[in-house]
Amino acid sequence: MPRYVIDISYKGTAYSGWQTQPNCITVQGEVDAVLSRILRTPIITYGAGRTDSGVHALKMPAHFDFEGDLPQHFFFSSNALLPRDISITKVHKALRSDFHARFSGRERAYRYQIIFRKDPIKHGFSRWIKETVDVPAMQSAAKVLLEFDSFESFCKTNSNNKTYICNLKESYFEWEGDMLVYHIRANRFLRSMVRTIIGTMLMIGKGDLDEERLRHIIQSKDRTLAGMTELADGLFLTDVAYEEGSLEEVSFAINNGK
Image (cartoon, rainbow, N blue to C red; front, top):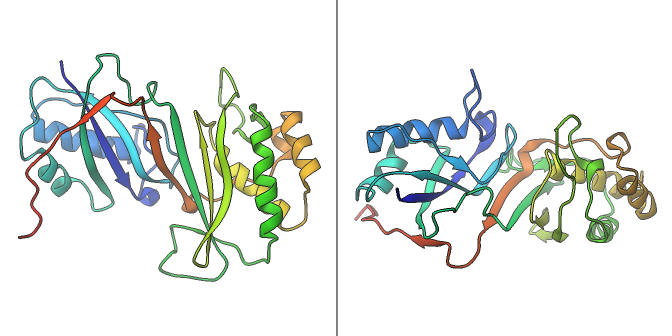
């Protein structure tokens, strides 16, 4: 049976995360309902991972199986029926029978957006910090994370992880206009890891921690020593990368308003 992969973008504010849960409105629940309606058969998608309640995604790949070719109206109809805060941006066909949106992923990337003045346009998409912070100190501390591969100190307690090993590829801050953005890329992430890193980085920016203390926190594997888990508003899943040649894009007739 052919396996299809859709890239999904969504604003997570109104949802209890990606994964379907009893008595909760979730992104996966909305997507599965729409695909089942369009394809006239029960469809269950399998996402590349989880995002917590309120977290956004620029690219959340999810796969599903469907016998035969997708109808030409699939792309247009899916986006027409999905809520305004969820969109399918691309559709691929998996070229390997064992492809899995989650387990085949080689790298994942997130960004966290921070603003320092009240901005109603960015409200819901960024964390407003009212205090002055030492951004160079935070930038230097972000590089310290690359020295380690075990991040139990930044993981939500009672998450039942088999391992806390994550191979980080990138960890840095950069300015985008007047918005400070933290970028992080790794082969995998732990529950609430990025938001807890941000909480810890902000402690450094405010002078409550230094780099040596940060190293001690990571080595201690003690969640209680790290910073608070920051708000979900500023967090975006931005990319999930797969082995080259795993996917082939599917083209559809697009209604572009002409």
